[in-house]
Image (cartoon, rainbow, N blue to C red):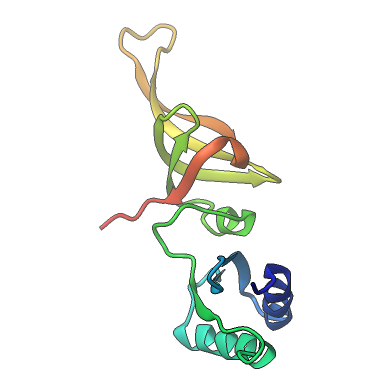
Length: 154
C-alpha cells in the first residue's frame, strides 16, 4: 500500500509558493489515492492536472500500481480544514450540531478551532410585547459539530 505521508509530502512540495491549500488525502487499501485541494477563488482543472502529473512523476507504477484522483473540495461539501472556514467569513453557512440541530446563519469569525455564526432569532426585548428578530452569535468548536458547509443559494 502506498504511504499516505509520502503523498502528503509530494502535495506539500507542489503547494509551496501557491495560494492553494490541502484539504484532504485519502489512500485506501486498494491503492486508490484521492487528493482534495482548494483555493479562495476556486480550483482550476489545469492545476488539478498539474498536481496529478507531479505526483505521478514521483511515484512508480512499477513498484506499486495505484489509481490517482485530484480534485477540488467541492462547493457544497462540509468544511474539513480551518482555511475553508476563513475563506467563507461573511457568507451564509449551514451547521449541523452534534445533537442534530441545523443552524443557518452568517459565518462571522474563526479563531483557531472555533468559529462564530450569526443567526437571526426572535428575542424577547424588555418593553416590547412581541419578540424581535435580532442577530445572535453562536460559537462552535470545529471538532464538536457534525459539519459546517457553505449554503448555496440560487
